Length: 113
Length: 113
Image (cartoon, rainbow over all chains, first blue to last red; front, top):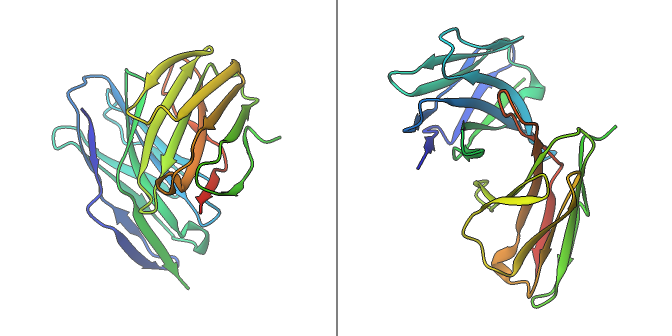
């Protein structure tokens, strides 16, 4: 079974600064994908970024980037130039070939003005 | 324009009642899912349908029955509602092939009194 662990239940960052959210996972699959989803107060689940495990290059999407350490099974999310609209719950998620998403427990991020 | 829609967004009902939540996606995806998010924000998959066929059925009470009339719809029917069923239920869909990012609906907040 896959597990995803987010060790930071809550974090805060000042507007315009950079913050990194941690995630570790455990899987026996050789082919898998990793995602970060964002859930703002509106409750909508929004895909932020994705990473294919077979790709060594870290994914980036504008202000969002990941640090994917496959050997360490670590998948952290870096948010640069934080904005008030980044305030949300962030979920680290793994996907395997069985069509299953496994969610971490989430990290609540507060961006302060 | 809505990619994945759910109705209703809010549902308040008494214990013992039967209720349904509807989900529709206009993305042309073949696979649809139901997730339950509990009060601690933990998300867990309940069901997955691919082309109207059940492919994942996690351990949920048999009071929960998904119904897929076509591949654009996956409804969730809940019989004999219990207090512990109170949660936010998310519908999601994904396309076959490639990184299987799932696109989520806005969620349905169910409160059982």
